Image 1 (tube, rainbow, N blue to C red):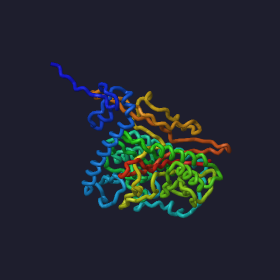
Image 2: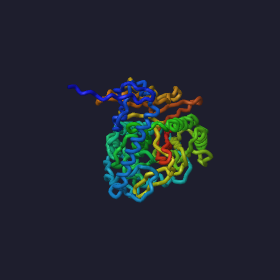
Image 3: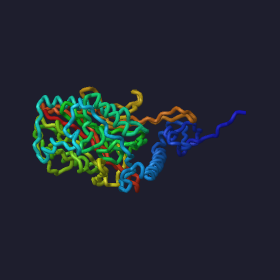
Image 4: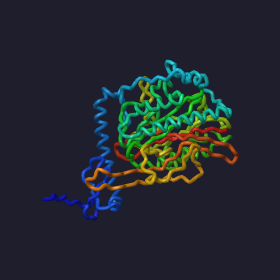
Length: 465
């Protein structure tokens, strides 16, 4: 006698039709039920239904955090530290990786404390180096190499992989390109790149923690080649990330682009902070003051300092031949940062508990994108870059596809607009600005309201020539 399957009603309020379609995210999160009669009912119930996903993820994260805390004595080198969020370091670290002697090295590479004597010699000076055309070309070459390395890291980003594995791939990619990974031994930093997850602002140390669904990961790459440093980074979604911080992401991107739009000879560096803070505050956000942009060329960090907040005291006026970074960080809540410091640890976290993971405004990049037909419109990409004068699409459509009940095949994809990280712009004075966009991120959880709060940082390499 054939078995009869129990009748399931559609879970949409007011609909009692037979339901044979099931939410794919609920299947993935092992949420029972969640049946609908049609795509239309599913989409109509999405605003309330997605709260089930958030609750399931929160419960999962609480269990994972509890397990991590219970194992602090084995994995966390600072078990007594008062963390601002759920993230914990996962030690021990692997040994510092070697770089062959035939690769040109910066002066700090073999220093016992990782000090750059050339940077120390110029410490405190406000004199900004003017690069010649040959030096500018060297900066273009090293930045292109850094971009290649970052793309390799991007392809590895997925749930279940460790940032230690990403760092290993970055190290090998640098060596293959005859580059020294600039972070390695810089003031004794133990790894070849910085990987900052969730509530870490920047300088996160790659470790053995597995990336989890919903994480946000920033990978910061700097390489040293032919005597010059190329610095860029990018932030990635890991799996399905909450959508609550889109306004923050858009605002930060707009802060960056407004600052870039003002770059030309004769502009005071302190003016960039006025532009960034004005737009951030107009949208209800504050600016992180703990970090600033900086000059870069033969030195990893040098003059000028480029603060991102208003009424700063930055010294200097932009001139042709200057090379510097713009790296605005904005946040909801207070811009208070705390440092987790022990030995070689250079991890930074935001002190405010009113923060939670957000997205990426530099390049919303899915390391495993859907087929081309499912992608949202993106900015044109090429080896040269995209024209920032073209319209920018800041919509983030979701493709919500139901699965047939009992089927093992389903899709629930999120497609995001993304931008290439190289831009070329021309001013009416025929000044040429070359930018490399990069980002940092900082987040932690508001345990009381469970609302989305985040700090987001994206940056740009600018050369005036």
